[in-house]
Length: 108
Image 1: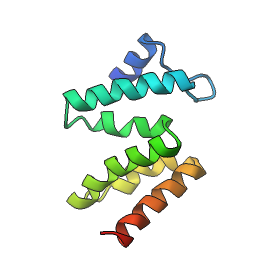
Image 2: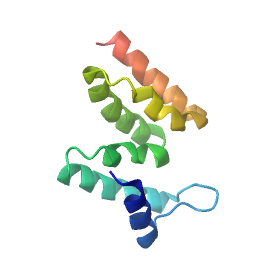
Image 3: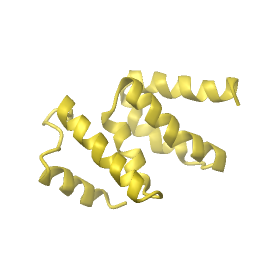
């Protein structure tokens, strides 16, 4: 759960974003594999579920945001949308989050 640890790990593996804050497709693939492995090993590691939302897009983002939000909504975690607020800078991610939440409402 230590962000500094994960940042250092990414730097040591050459998986840090470029100066514009973006990851390459190859880095994204490697990071997804690494954090999927973390999720499998450490079931309750929230960072392994949350961090990939920052660099994934499209269908991968949609699947991961659903996997991240659904249990938190069931538990009634009040800070969920505050946690996701950092993703609101990307209009596509906002649209995906909105569609995901609307799908919960339409198909409980």
